Image (cartoon, rainbow, N blue to C red; front, side, top):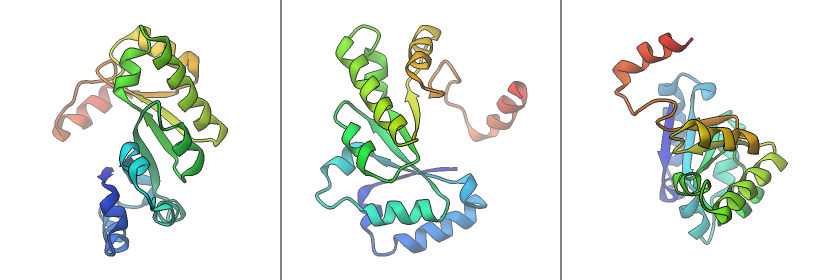
Length: 161
């Protein structure tokens, strides 16, 4: 289960209680991913580093979501397990060498800290081939599957396993 969080959630005095309840609903930390926007963290004058570390200490995977060209420094300093490279960068990298350089910078920063990098917005094989060559091992996008209701997910997974 993935939960999108705002920076305000992470600063909330009741967040620890929310985290514990979410852990119970998810069925354990190995089944839970907490995602927070890289842009919001970058703008936060006092990033909630202790809360990110607490989640990781509890076994919850923490994702830096929607990372852009400005976020390699966040990957280097924050306690996260996964960085999701933004759809905007991924969609431009085939035609814009600067976007490709930015994707390289983010994935390089992630690799240096043993952080898993996921590309968002992968629409075709050519894009995936380029990303795989850069070191990505996972992606989200229409190449994998279109958005679907949870009722279809089990069937979709069964057809691919």
